[in-house]
Length: 458
Image (tube, rainbow, N blue to C red):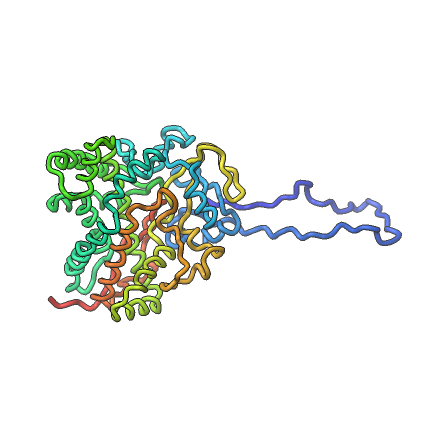
């Protein structure tokens, strides 16, 4: 589908004199001549959105929207209509606007349409009460409890475990000379890390990997048209397991996130079992796929920019870390893991980018478009791993800023540095045109990333 912008003259087309109309010549120049103003050119038709071609490279379409329709009402493949916000200034304002609620109860559509927003299966599994679906004061209370697991000290202490997982996964394919970096590396690393963080026993973590794999393969996160049944079944299994694990942690707590949530509940913080399960679920769901895409998109981007990759490898060989840190931020900006921020709903009329948004209308902030806004970033389509002025929106903004961003950054930096150091000649094993992107609405990531490299001997 496409949305063309049309220009019409309200007075209708000018009439030319007919063949039998007499015209009278003016005796002299008029005393006043209306200044001639040229009409602005009609922009080309809007690009088609949400196709497979669009998924491969959405950035030209987003550039068109930023220029011609920065706050654009679009019908999504699911049939739901939503406003797409594409300019950096509008995006940042929307992300921090308290009138744009995260709670789906404010969606003006009927109940069946509400089910097409958010994460498939979370409604039926009673997992709606998490940070992505609630507003203050409940959001403030739950975020305060969960934030204890993501302190800088806790993340720093987790660093050696992330390095251990990274090395173990690379050891699993290093001698083969080839791998699918999504399936063999980018996907299992964050799922095992988050399982450790939650307190999932080692013997159960492969089950979590299978359930998460089902979710990441089939979830369209509101895209519509995809096989949502498999996601719902996986969510139901995760919900049942989390309920059982919460009971176990209540009896035998440990030094993990779920035990912390249980203790908070027992200490009078009024965290219900459903809230604890929903919080553990969203940390799993939101925490692992963003990191999968950060690693996958990051490696893919570096392969497409050999000069920048070589620059990073020289820095790593010299034992430096500064370019790695700024480089991960640039990869987040340039082709980040989250294409659109999760759903928001207007609780009162809101004006964004000159457009009036009605009560109950859904709003989707297009992070991928905002982070390439030339009004905010110099040469936004250019990858510069040393970019300093880089206040990107890749992990959001405001009170809903991604709680797990420090952990994702740690995992991304560790994964990229270790991969480029241990497999310095890693290269794409297929034609770039053969790569396929998952067709989801919220996340942006590759289905597979086949690579080759010089095998490492044991």
